[in-house]
Length: 123
Image (cartoon, rainbow, N blue to C red; front, side, top):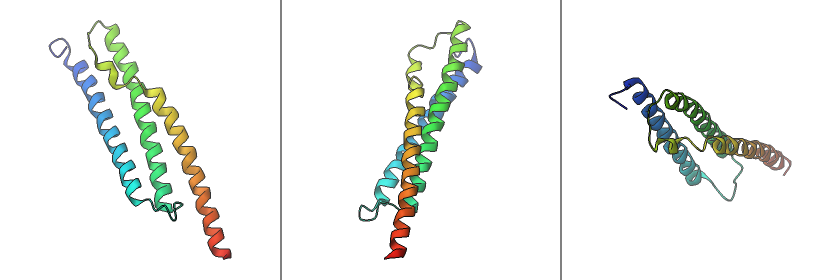
């Protein structure tokens, strides 16, 4: 493919590298949140912000995967062979759905923080 169309080659590998970097950073955020999570007082601003950040990164991965699917579909229709590289962006819908679920959890955490703060003020 590199000899046939360098632009298509670089486009495909840009998507592969960008998705790999986003997924690695997503798991870094998850591990960082797990280290900072205090089970005695789980509803903290830090955890809420981290969960929101995780949902944004998850949505970004899903969105970039959708864009990659469409772009690679056009490259395939032009007659280029890409082999088994489609495995990198086949789960775009799952990431978008997961981002929505994680965002709902972050909203619940924000409400939990509000309730915890009200409880601390009344006691």
